[in-house]
Length: 325
Image 1 (cartoon, rainbow, N blue to C red):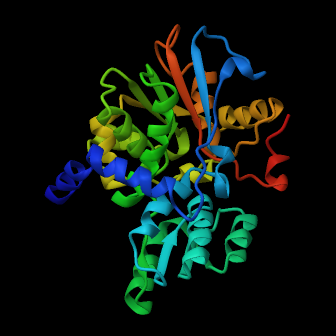
Image 2 (cartoon, rainbow, N blue to C red):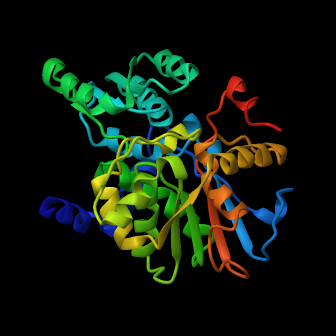
């Protein structure tokens, strides 16, 4: 725990600002995505409040993951031999960066991940190996030991978290003092980074909520157990279903996040459909925060300035048909 505490203390405002500049100037061309008022969409809203939506579904590679990846790869030697694990979005950004930097890459994917995502990752030149969810870390260790590969963690990594914090700074540029920020949570890298950026920037009164699926609530259970825990995660939001919560994300979330709330798969499915009907293509994992707002999971938001992150839009036509009414 001592090393983790030191890692948490090392996540300073200066470090996050430096990472933000790295992301902003990255050759991977990370986008400062739009943040639009809810009132300028056709989305229904039952609570009178000022909600803005951050559209990371319009990000390069289709999700926020490219932010953390841009900072990770900028701080690793070019031409490395890397391995990671991902259900799709991190793997896509990892593969995109590997091709740009001339690195060798291998992505370990859970067997439940859509075939279309594996095919897309392979199109960037990365190898893909599909393994049972419970065996992911065992195969990572095998690649490191037998093939001399370097493991890039998809969420429990300080460089990655610092890169994700760039999203938080962009939010503050348009809404300097948000009352509430709602963010999806899988392993916790995005939630930890954005929460740290906002709180360390002086927004002490801002309430930050993470949102997880009921069937993949590792951070929610970690908050209860007061330590990072794992579970047999199952959800239609595969990107929010890691085998365990990240250690550093957990520590940062404990410090900066108000609470973790849960939504069920039916609510996530309805959110995909509702957003699509309003012209927004968002994957199941990307719309968890919206589902929390739509189903009144976030307390005391009437009359508040609220930001909701739509974190990704990587959903194929074959998947989309299963979600639309």
